[in-house]
Image (cartoon, rainbow, N blue to C red; front, side, top):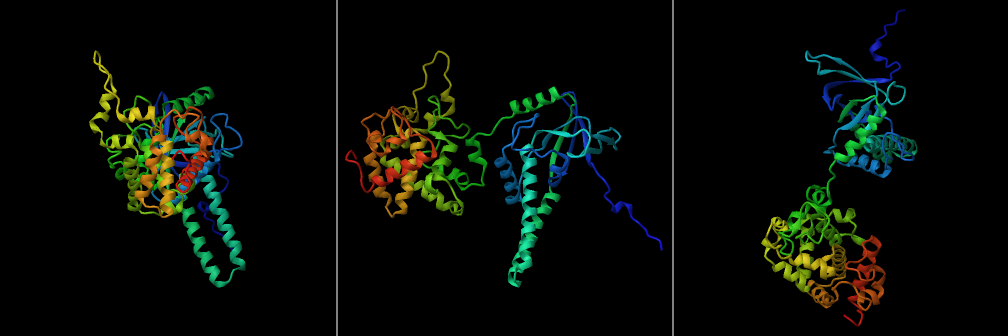
Length: 427
């Protein structure tokens, strides 16, 4: 009897993978560019250990890595930049084009390979993919164990769950991510590459994130909310920090923070219930709050009526031999009132939400806020209601804003909500 064996069916012992790649130059170094399946990231790259820092990189944050894994799982339309990797000498490139730029790129595996690859930028993505693969595999094993003892109805449900998990695992094998591999054998120069990448990366501000991140309802509704007369033309769409020289009322991120306070759960944190609201419901609620405060508080009413031209960015620049442009009312508000603090506006947004949930009408909330108006002056004195009542724990002496820790914002929101029914004598 003869046996025919197809050797191509045997994986044998492997310690490397081969991909189609491009060869180019950058900064005097050879760079290989390729795309690999997500599932193979933890195969060719060392899995970062959150318990200790990599000698060639910073310590990885396990929660951030898990977040990337969840992002992949929950977003079929995911997007991520290419990973930056350093080749210490283990890669091989076999040209197949006449100019030598296209060829077969063979890279060593993280374990067993010779001349391992080192991650410059992307270690959270590597760990995130690994944790997601591990999670799916563990879930499949759990389903298989439960199926052994399940009745027919339960088995059918478990089978559907198993198929869904397998589809998720298959996505990691079928979807690719870019990888740029820099040939650099010098360890000192390799560490400098990490520093250079970190130094030259421009992080995204909260204001920009709020404008473009439509995965959160507070961001998705931003365009409609900033069209309110209190905000229109007075919101900084690029910066988060409102310095005394900034002519705007607040940044786009702050508008999103206020939105979350108006629609959110305890402390203004959004949850699944909140995220299930329709855009129109959110816009209506937040605009209702803005209508109330822009009428109840005299300073905000004045800003609502102020000429938007006063907020034009060009006015922030001081021209030679010309006097500075008078400050906007928003700039003056930050110096004179608690209402110039986004933290205080978040608190008032939470109070508005609480009272609305208790059935209080907008008109009654507006009258209540009017009674608070004269207590908004800063700095907060020792004789003010903010330092002589249970609100005291949320204000430092001579403060111009409440303490911004989440527990303080939540506590102050509750205090002012309770005052609606039983107010201090001063209001």
